[in-house]
Length: 337
Image 1 (tube, rainbow, N blue to C red):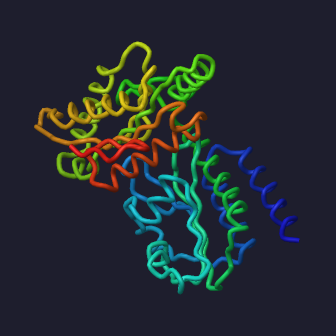
Image 2: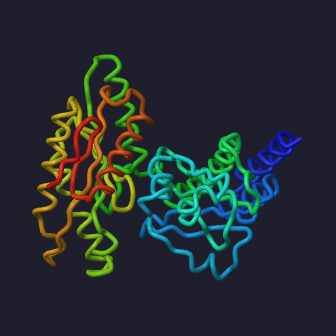
């Protein structure tokens, strides 16, 4: 039975995952077992490079070595972008019925059906797992949960390798920015949730992304871009009160917790940060940039950690999609500069 075969595959993957801090062996096994389970034409683990935020293929089946090596795509604003930002799976049961989405999701070969699911850990997107077939209807909604399980194993393997290499547990400070590392920030968020549930205190989450960071790095060089990153982090730190917290969420993304702050006040604070960052020059080169900010508020928008972060991510996605350099919060219109 397919369920028995799937259980055996899960056991094999867990055995490898427990035995190594290197993700490549786990990736290869996951791809092989997905291909065997679904009879895929192509299968690939596609991850986000945290330094450049480009997508690249880590391990694949059914793709040429040249294609995999040269594959390098930007984070898109369409189906791929929504998959990566919100975790919404992309299911194409018949490409002839959804040709534009199929063209966006296509890797090297045309397909008739396809299923792609997000890879994430601690609410941070790491990439996605792609599987396609020459047969229409090879994937259905009932397969999403199964493929998501394989994607979760891949995400854990990648995160385990990164934790091992960076030794995150021994140091709470990100020394490129002097902000909290993300695991340490999550501890502050958990404390705020416990306090909010017991006292009814509102607090806000702000997710900030530097606009056009890759273009700035290519224009001025990565050293100047990293100095700009540090200086923007300094602006964020200066805006914090003793009860607030700020951390590094991604390579050019920050996350801020504002204690005792309802939605309207959170948006005002976020807009103030937007203005300060937009009006500053960086890295002694008169570099100019801006930020997009997504906001969520406890308990107005959500009461649990995962949902709060998801709302902030969706709001940030909308801020970027609608033109950048602006603040978005649920229930409030996009606020341009």
